[in-house]
Image 1: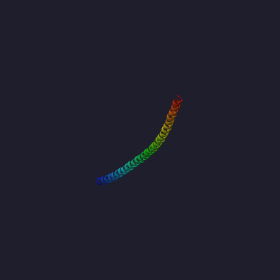
Image 2 (image 1 turned 135 degrees about the horizontal axis):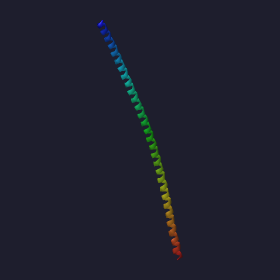
Image 3 (image 1 turned 90 degrees about the horizontal axis):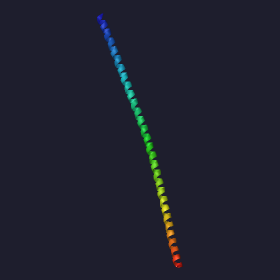
Image 4 (image 1 turned 90 degrees about the vertical axis):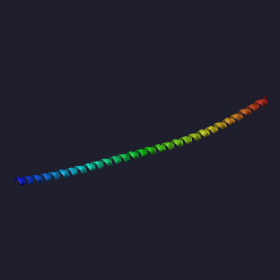
Length: 107
């Protein structure tokens, strides 16, 4: 009778050990799934961050091109203004000498 009881206990222990092993394997699988899911989430967040950074870079590049265009326009405006001022100065100089000649002739 003790041998039968011992055999039953041994069978129960094996069933219990098998159940524990299966439970541990299930836990390991769940942990792997959680880890994989976490890694996928991190990859998605990283991708989103990279996309936002690229959008920011594109926006900044557009701003730089706009500023360059504005600077070119300002340079052109300044060049035109300087040319007009130079022409006005030349006309004033010519007029000044013309007036001096008239005054010189009157004297």
